[in-house]
Image (cartoon, rainbow, N blue to C red):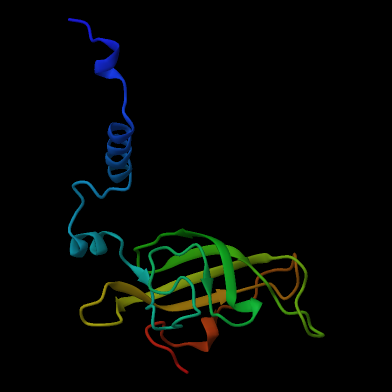
Length: 162
């Protein structure tokens, strides 16, 4: 049996429905796990959103590609690629700004290394989180990376120290 042209011609309503179903399937919302199941599959996260509320970026998220303190450029790391995420210690490499000895910042971005550790929970019912973050940067562009230091001198990424 062959179809007549009118039987297989797409209508705007049918096309919209097909596109909606395809988008939902692509984003995993059709037949997806419940919210509580979904949150456990994206663990651990980096600290808590309350570490740097309102202006911070990346805190309380899974494998953030960008972290920012909301302050000066030295607290902003972009294009982060993580390895060993979910293990006791995760390592990240990204790009950030560094201070010049006489003040200000060097032009351009340099390689920054991150080390997330101290897996646990920030809140009893919260997701598993890396609660400590260390960073190391070169003292000048192209120079060797320096010593590990705590991110923002914070002993925990669970809450703001301010």
